[in-house]
Amino acid sequence: MIPVLRCLMIMSATLTTPAAQADSIEFSGYVGADLSYFPNTGLYPGQLADLQYSLVLAPEINWQSDSGDTQVNILAFGRIESADTKRQHLDLREGYIHHEFDDFTALIGINKVFWGVAESRRLVDIINQVDQLEYTDNDARLGQPMLTISTDQDWGALSGFLMTGFRKLEFAGTEGRLRLPYPVLDTAVFSHRSREKAKDYALRYYNSFGDFDLGLSTFNGTSREAVLKLVGGNSFQPNYSRITQTGLDLQYTGDATLLKLEAISRSGDNFKHFEAMVAGLEYTIYQIADTGSDLGLIAEYNYDNRGANAPLTIFQKDAFVGGRWVANDSEDTSAILGMLIDLDDGTRSFQGEFKRRLGNGLSLNLQFRALGYSNPANAQHGFRRDDFLAVSLKHFF
Image (tube, rainbow, N blue to C red; front, side, top):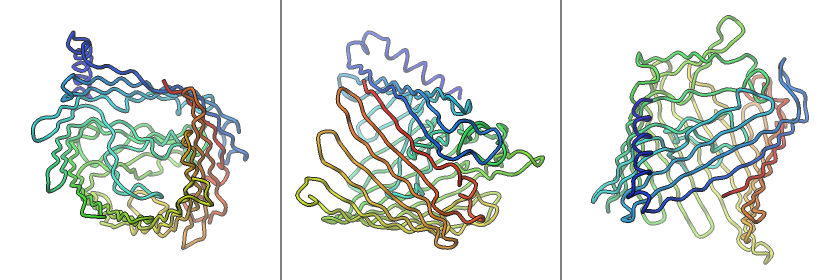
């Protein structure tokens, strides 16, 4: 983390210079309150109240030079939780300097990068670690220290990544919901001798060919997924392998139809090579009954043939069906509803989300997740009493 600290010191010095003060500095972000209701008593001893609340703060500072060539961005995120102390955390999501040269751009610091096109699963998206403590936000990612060099040419866009300071997965505590049967140790096992300091490398090519958007990527480094091994009969210890992954994301955009594909091939130090994919379509019905709103119908198929020694997944052979409704109003009202079905054992899970701006910088978010039926052999069976309804109110400034 020493290079990151140095980077932040440089950014702080940059923002306090007279030249920086003469340029554009913007302060933004949000403060919010979350309320989660779990109708069922927790499955494991020590899990706390059915009603949980928390406060969140996400301030952001952005500075841009008058020429527009240089940009500094700092985005932090913090949560204070009423029940699970492990869920109380502070993270620097972004903290980087970005500069545009004649033929390429360079970024150094902490950043978030998103790859992929699918709805039900983020398969090729491997740069950032998932923030598992934010169970109401599937898109939450931890900031990753990196150096990125990118170029955008007639033949496509190419980005190279050098990363260090690996971010370990965080897990709910014994008081929390959506937790494992046993606590997870803070100490982890790494297959590389340099542990968190080991260097990770990635390369991504992106281009559009008519109605097709194509992304090709390769990654070599520490796996963002962990194998949890039972130690002492009463706790799990995370094990992280060095992996090599190649990825493909492809999307076709028609008048009302999106065809999507994500596929990976991965090999690791401690498990056999495997492949995985998610493919599907989204068909949009515009101007439903002359209301001005649109309805997108989504269907995706997930396949994953990883073996027993690889990190656990619930997507071995699953189908996802859902719908996305967009009101197209001034309040940005939208809703999405989906169901994931395990085609082998019949396990079914449901999730939905509703979003709406309330005016004066306020926004409302409602979300639920429920496990309709779970086969005892399915990985989701351990969360069968963790159905929840969450309400989030945010004020943006």
